[in-house]
Length: 226
Ligand code: ADP
Ligand code: MG
Image (cartoon, rainbow, N blue to C red; front, side, top):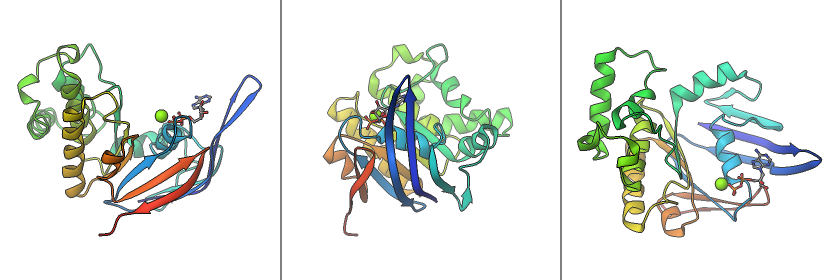
C-alpha cells in the first residue's frame, strides 16, 4: 500500500534544525495493522503525519499505491488523502459547533455522494460504533470515549482504506481505551489498513507488527507469529 524510501524530515525554526525523521525505510501492505512506538519526541507523529500527507518530507521518496507522491502538489495530495485515509487523534479533534452526525457527514462532503446516501451512510456508521443515540448531541455533551467513537466513525464513513491513529487511547480510561482498540481490530478484520502510534504495550499487541523509533530512526521491528 505504501513505501517510504530513505525518507527524512528536518524542521527549521529560527536557527535550530531538528531532524525528526532520519532516513526512514518502511513498507506497509494493504490490510496490515502496524503499531509505532518509541519515546516522546522520537518522531512518531511526524511519521504518521507524513504517511497521512499532512506533512511533506525534506528528502527521500514516498510511494502510495505504487505512485510516487513525494513530488505531488498539495491539491493532488488532498484528493488522494480524502479518498483513502481517515485520521484519529488523541484529542478527538471534533468540530465543537457541529453535532455528532454533522461531524461524521463532513468527511463525506469531499466524496461525490448524493445527500440521501450520505445520511444513510452516517446512520450505518453511527450504529456500527454505538453512537446513534447521540446523533443530535454536540461533542461537549459526550464523554471522551463517545467522542472517540465519533472520530472512528468519521475516519471510516467514506470507506477509507487506511486509518492513521495517533495515540487514539491516550486520553481514555482503560475500559474506553479497550473499546476503541476493539473497534480498530474489527475494522482491520474487515480489511482496513491501520497504522497506530501508541505508548501502551498492551494496545500495540493488537498490531501484528510493531515499529520502534528512536531519534527519528527505525531501531527495531517486531512481527508477531501468525
Ligand atoms: P513524537 O510524536 O514521537 O513525540 P514528534 O514527531 O512530534 O515526536 O516530534 C519529533 C521531533 O520533531 C521533536 O524534536 C519535535 O520537537 C520536532 N518537531 C515536531 N514538529 C515540529 C514542528 N512543526 N516544528 C519544529 N519542530 C517540530
Ligand atoms: Mg506525538
